[in-house]
Image (tube, rainbow over all chains, first blue to last red; front, side):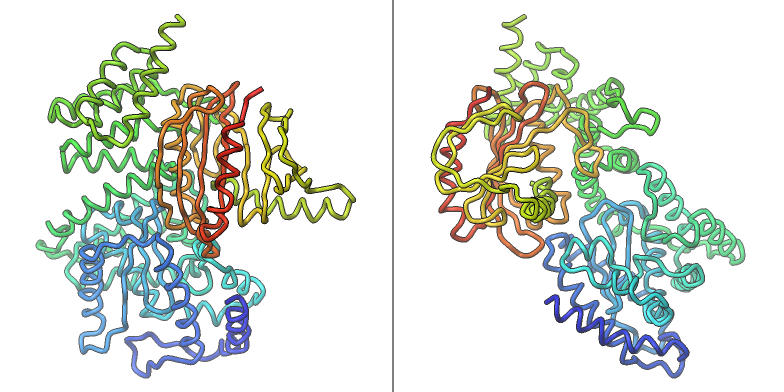
Length: 398
Length: 187
């Protein structure tokens, strides 16, 4: 496998000498697929295969089908006479706010950025941006403009999935394009969005969420923005673009179908956030979620997020997180669940765990016992008995 | 599990370096009780395994660290685990420590198709702890099966891990690991 990949890179290098040949967009006259582009697509196919087998794909036909329909709707404005490029949208289980396009027309969207796009128009803005990279053949342009061949090899050579996920640069949009190409994708995406009758002002909101995420999680260089056009500049550009055109009053912001999918993906994404320690993002997202859906599952997850939260502000790096406030928020959430649905066993467990941390042992024991009685076949019954035993032993010592 | 993956590279490098400086990097083991003064435990070592002599961690293998290995590691409290904001806290229960271990593995891009076969409390040398059994695939497509024990002892989280290639190596060495665990005593 390694030999094949190195061979492909060696094959690609001489072709990169075609930098002087003009690259027209896919929707321009005279467009045809060129040989080096075919090779880039073939390499991208290998990467797609790795991603498909990785176990990191969020396999949900309903979600993927809906996203692909949005892509087709946007493409129809760019290619009114048919002959559209093949675009496939794939969702990845990853809470990082990222999306990227490969040279084979596959667009990968993380559950993190999906959850951040709270309306269909925001999601359409994201897809339109990535599709513009494909339609305007930015990957080919980027490839042909690369002067530092060894750096290019370094970005396309990583083998295996970790390397792939870490640095898909060179053959995809995730390593970021030049400032010019990113702005072009912003503008192209904006136009597609406008022509498709989406409310373009929503794109600003998407970028604002991304800006918040960078700040919250102290992200140095998220792929989606690349390092070149600063996110603040892009927000400002979108605002200027939006100010130029009058939006139709019935421009689409959101749909019930998208909201239904968002609810499912956002819930899963918060769990991925907990796995990867993106606590602030999870805490922000649960607030957005609960504003829309005041239900026990969401409240329970809020309790879990605050019970487990371990991130520390920069100023407190050398000390542990002060958990008092977190535990209070967690307890409130668990109490809300119990008030709404007294049979929701996990809420008693969460409450007991928090009470134990607050050294309220008797109350903790009572809630652990309630959990055991309400969930007699829970997987963690033995753990809870172990914890009860530990608390009782501590009580005896005192 | 995740931490071990990163350590493997270090292990290979250290082995290379040590072999050039004349140190005995690996010790062939007899079936006898071994005392690890650094980490404060003793255990009966399985016959025909090899012990790695470098670094703080206790690591033994029979057929090579990729194919099977037993390790004993310890972690301080309030120290970020890998590149996440997660850490072990003194007040955590065995269940909470096990949860963090599983969450870190789920977030690890080197560990694919992680499946938790069981996650139960356990007692290790009298200390309340956990036992997780799992399978996963490495980034190079090797199917691994493993068992992890963990517990708190003297202001540290101790983790004892056994992993082996699922085909052939797991079944042929899991008995050695169970004997190791049975004889494991804290000093």
